[in-house]
Length: 223
Figure 1 (tube, rainbow, N blue to C red):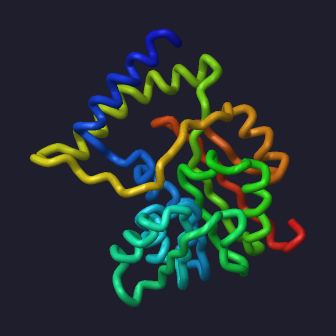
Figure 2: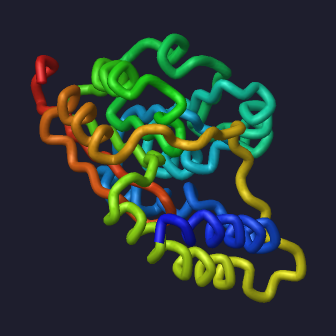
């Protein structure tokens, strides 16, 4: 299976080039379902062109998105309606986040670009008591179960591409994101490091080469 899978992935890349859809945006509604109906402030790390930040703004009093790519941040600003409670800035997620505490922190397809333990520790400091941290990340397949999930994802990915592009003469545009690199950390190592920093964090492997992490901070600032 491990020998065949790279060839299948290359074929999938060719298919995806002509039938693109956003694997990260697929999880945006999933994220919303795990958040309160209303909250005060939210931070979206690696905000790209701002789709998730604008979605969070339907529930939040204020949302801030940060991304290291200035071109994408400018695109996010252009696509945000005047008066919307959303701001964007260019910067390093570990150094340039505006000070303050956030009720919600989201990080989609970004944390594998950062030192995991350091990033999660930083997010924990920024999370208000009672707040929720949600990460959708990438991991490096290593175990048999990883490769089985990848195998299941192949037909699911093709089906989703057909559904999302059905009836379109031109491919559906995919939201702009900063250039990405492959994940280098296997899922068990991510689980170990995450739970060391965030005791009780819930992590799960998902389809489309992603995993999710959900952590709710206790009501005390010390938790």
